[in-house]
Image (tube, rainbow, N blue to C red; front, side, top):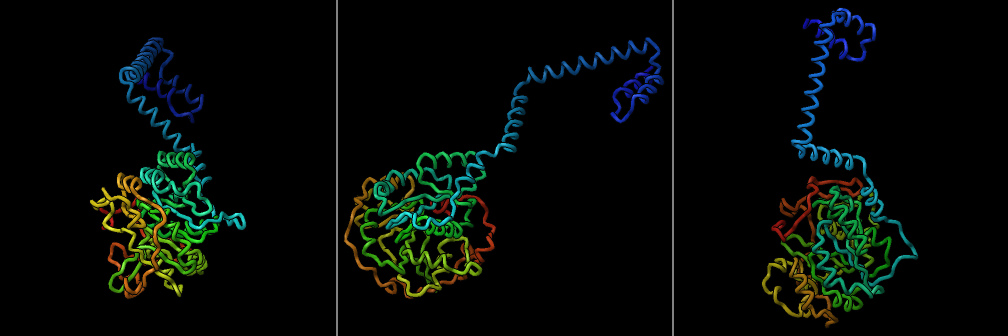
Length: 393
């Protein structure tokens, strides 16, 4: 009898490739012309169905949480796989490099603040302090944030798009995050700047830099209009370089950067080394090392910056102004026009202007590569936290 039952189930659950004739033959061989066999088969079949219904009921109602989780994961997977609307929106809002020609905005100074997508707190601190001098003064200064636009994290991507829509002061570069792209960021920034603005000076500055912007604007008309490279220079034995946290260039220097032969233009993971490589072929430069720029240790780690008053009387800017320090400096800045001193002779600060990337320690030493090859240096896509958490010391 059990053989008959086995043959019966085989006849009705075999793969679909078994045709009807074969199923009939199996049923006939199973002895289903015996009424008792039919009754036993029916009982077994009904019992199996009842057991399956019971298991489904207890799984669904007695333990509902795993089912809910599975449904949520399924829906999330479907969204991630099929809903690319926010990605398309991001790509739509990336900067372009189309030259505006006669329609370029004319400004004395263009300020580009380099910032990571996740640095909302830093951007907000800038907006509520020295950034205020950017508004209502369009003939003199334009201030913009520049960040990476190719953001893989959906939440962060939506946050930056919302922030961009709200404040209208953020521009998205066609780049991912990571330490190894500072040079490319600077190249993108100056390409975009030259295409969209007619500026006399360009300042590239970090998002943790407090700037005495009114003091800077007041003295720019008295500074050289050509061949100017202004910032904080590092002077070491056998090597000199401009720190990328604060770099001012006259417009002609930017144009010379962009006029390089595309086949030989070199890029580097770090913008300051890349800049020095480019400057090495430009003659008659005026290097302005500004001692009014506090560079290190970070201002937030220096006690005097937590209670200093009228900081712009003695400084033009302070690097490493994190969190409360940025707000404190903004409240007590006394930022306005001051006396303007002549640019000091650079040789009195540093005896040479030599730059050789091979002199750097291993942490900072990377071989420059042609920009046209879109090179990488295997430094990952993680955000660079900097000296706020001890990186780069």
